[in-house]
Length: 154
Length: 154
Image (cartoon, rainbow over all chains, first blue to last red; front, side, top):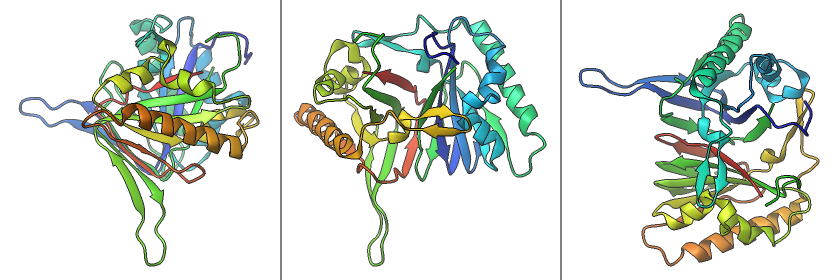
């Protein structure tokens, strides 16, 4: 990864004791649906313009990806949260998202990243992988004994 | 803020419905102590080498600071969390923190930033400002209806 080039993806990682995310809002006649992990890591993810499938293995595998490798190596679960706001850039008092990828490509890359992580982790015991729904409001509860927040760009 | 220069501070912002942070662990004879805010924003903050007091007003005031201005303008509370891990950089499977400021200067800048925010917000009604203790493990519970995670560098 060259530091000089503009990143095509940004992630924020937070460790958790438990995290739950609403994946379907309550409607008349049905309650809201949640996914939940216990000890593990929440990964918030945002793709920028120019991101392609090539970046996904790097985010999951390459040595430069550090924590991702660690979470795939450790006996912890993973909650993947699409988070387009991470691509925001301050302009005056507002945030602008001009550099974010379009929704179609963002959805496709997000689902491909989830599939890649699921494939990597399916053989591991006591590990679950859960994920939010792209485009939804990410209603999240997080319980940590130190979030150890990290930011990584790819 | 020039994009070409290395940043001297990194923050991650998350909106919350409620957030609580342990500021004193339980000891024999005393229970753990927590600070808590209701609707507002959690700001995780990390200073890099080269950061000076000059950056603090920029983080709190200048138009380029976007969300910070917004939180100071809006009727929401603020929970400030020191988070040195935010300065991490992946190296192999580990994270390195070589660019983080030393602890003495980090503590001083952190406390000055908290004081600056407290001064700005003291006149506002229905707003509280709470903060973590520099150097502590940041035991955090976060309840959001969408964290709207943002990352900003200064």
